[in-house]
Amino acid sequence: MRTITTSRLFLVSAIALATLAGCPKGKMPGGGGIPGGGDVPGGGMVPGTGGGESGMVDPNSCGNYAVSDAGKKLKFFLEATQALETQTKETLEVVKQSCIMIGNEIGMTEADYRGETKDICAQVYQRVNENMKVAVKAKAALKVKITPAVCKIDVKATAEVAAQCEGKASADVGASCSGTCRGTCEGECAGKAGTGGNKGQCEGTCKGTCKGDCEGHADVKASAQCKAKASVDASAKMTCTEAKVEISLDAKMVLDKAKAEATVKGLMAGLPKIFSVKARLEPLKYAVEAWVTSANELKGSARTLAMSFKDQAACISGQIAAAANMIGGIQANVSVSVEVSASASGSIGG
Image (tube, rainbow, N blue to C red; front, side, top):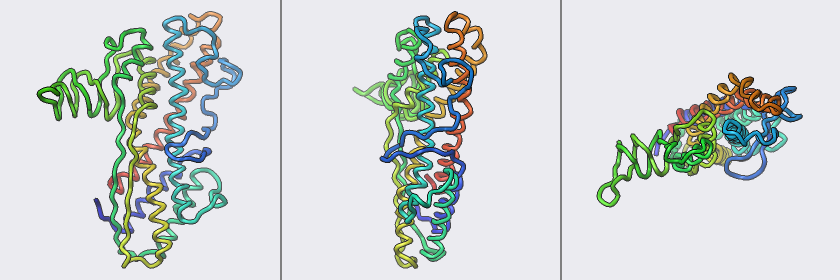
């Protein structure tokens, strides 16, 4: 439990919302949790590169190329590309949703949300500031309690995905946990280790193979394409608790009860979304890094690789080019999400 002044709390909102203002435009469907999707202009599109009429990444557009080992790995990579674009869009969309949730609670309507996401967030931020100028005294205090979100990766499942891609047994691929291992550690456990009948159990850093849940990300010993597939799959399937933010007002310091309570209610509705994004970012950032490494590797060898597929060369070349063209957009989605969560959590202490 932390107590912070009103001025600091709403400086937090200013930082969070001002950062949110840099988000790209997207559509928000109804519903809770992490929403699925708006479009990133031009994402995944490469005019005139082949691989289907649209130039979009489509793992199934080049026929039976996956019968070979190289083709199989490429298909896994292209599947990861599609999944990763969806994940990063959904994560970024939480940012816009947080602004809208705050705005809805303080009396804003659909008619107030004009322009791009950055415009919407700026309008919400302006209304929050206007409310607080008349709603509370300058030295009013608020008590803030944050329950952070926790995300876990299944290390064994990650190893199995990489093994399927490589055509090996999962034991031959192996996976380590970069973070807190909660399971069996085949190696040294730097943390809370099990004793007696629970010998081998670990709740800490596992210097070896972790079999269980990982709070962090799982690293596999595999080729770039298979590592990308395994990392993206792990990020998509991670299980997370939801962050909670509780804010209480000192009634003696309130000037306009209705506006003060509505604004606090809005922040309590919107800020948890940002804190939930923070917990999802480490596995997602790692997945993006692994995928970018693979995309650049494929881009560098695209001509040679494509020619090995003979009649499918033009299609394969187009798919690799389409994937490489998505690097900037995917990285930007994650970069904005990182910046937003860092600004909000760093300022409010989450």
